[in-house]
Length: 156
Image (cartoon, rainbow, N blue to C red):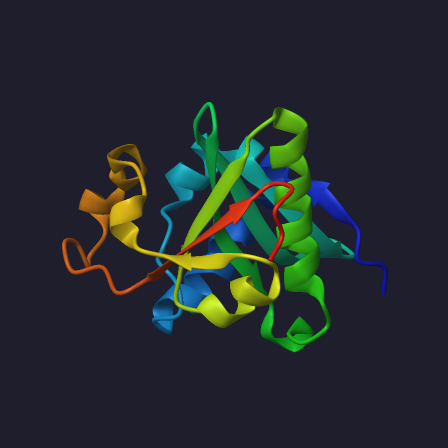
């Protein structure tokens, strides 16, 4: 199986939506409406197996020096094959190309991101602008995700 990371296209949006919300329905990540995926399709990377999207992740730019990795999902049958690592690497590479020094994530699986070189952070350390979409979250204001940060060039 070739694990080629590619930028998502419009034709991937419904599959990305289905993949993310499969895990959201299990309480493992936050749901994303299809309209939001279409609006932010340029943020997404995917890995396909044939015509099927088996993994996705988004790099969302928040500010000149800050971006977020979000909506990282890998089909269950492809867990433990390094595909999540490939998705994170693609996001970090793009952040570096854009000149963004700090990447953060909010996650229910902090150990995975620590393995990728992220360090635990207090949510209060993140700028207020990153909370722009939080008011739409069903768990707002009682966020139970862990915050992690990655500094380009300072892998732990």
